[in-house]
Length: 104
Image (cartoon, rainbow, N blue to C red; front, side, top):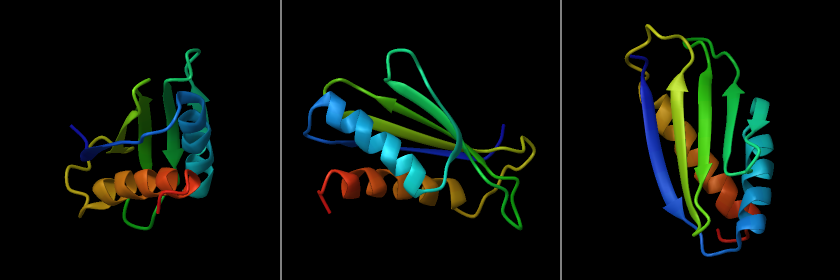
């Protein structure tokens, strides 16, 4: 199993505002290949290749009550140690969402 991390946070805003903030936050962290589900409650994306890593696959789940889960997984399946890269990416996405909502 590839190295991965998952973090979550609750935001006390409306669902439409939260979806918009997630969309803009993914741009802020330079995510590519962004694909939303039909319900606009799940999105997947990719982060580019780094010198030591093959990039990351991101997924974000949005609960109508404001809970957001961010999961980052190394794109290359044999990478089992990432030095905290995936956890930092999850934190960066959650921080970017908070910034877009004007909470930080």
